[in-house]
Length: 141
Image (cartoon, rainbow, N blue to C red):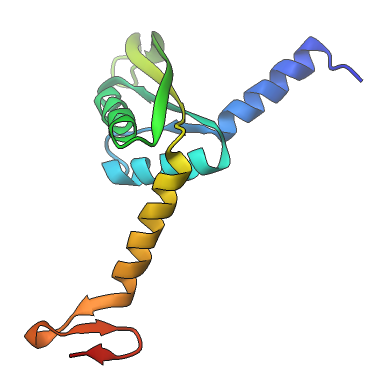
């Protein structure tokens, strides 16, 4: 069975939307997007980070954090402008747009399992008064 070109295009667009993160510089903190990108990379081999205008710096920062920590490799970067209607003035204003496609690095799975091990350890231990370490079960002297 072969798909018609229109069906293939629709299927490709649906797949792209599942692994796309549209970043805003006002709605969520930076590391919300970093952690979301890691989760998306676990599910998909690549993700697309996109932003408009002032949020572009946030997208670049997210991509650099993921790359510098070994979670992802840069696949492509696309810049463009998008015409948007200014609600105050009623005219079309061009906004800068960026799309950064990242793919999972070879070290991704080992880095993720190492970070989960650290999170589980810190969740089970707390330092209490007098330098004693408390786990969920007991206090060690």
